[in-house]
Image 1 (tube, one colour):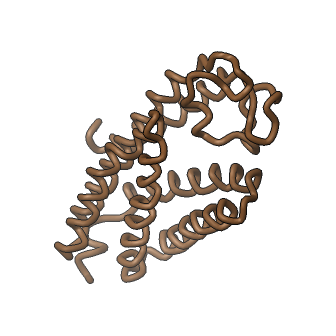
Image 2: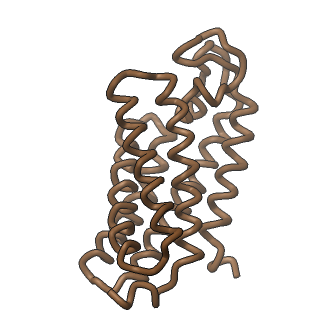
Length: 200
């Protein structure tokens, strides 16, 4: 039972813990250093992992955020490993296994001083979801096809805003792509079966 729902359990635990961390975040964002509390439209998730908030106060939500990111990394790691077992093409299955194992480490690094190294996980996750999308398009899982495309688009829009320097829009899109990615992962984990991919 726990093994079957391990991805869902980890992701729900991650969301709850990050929410707790956001409520305990003292304040300050890149756009307004004097703002109070964590503002979802202006703060980045990475603000929750610092010892001191941007406004200079001690960040009492940090420990909750770090534990939440640990659950997040386990959830995504297990997801990609599970998806690799559904694919009939050994080469692509191994690439998803690698992404799953790598994400166990790199996603968690986002919550540490090695944050910049940890952002490799975003590229790995995007590559993994793109690979899965290619296979989903060869199945009859039409709703998941729409979900895959929507999720990938949110990633690309996030990168576009970041590259153009629109920080406030980037902060908002960060939450959008995280949410769409979470929903897609849950959908793929529990609404796709090995038989769907054997047809390929």
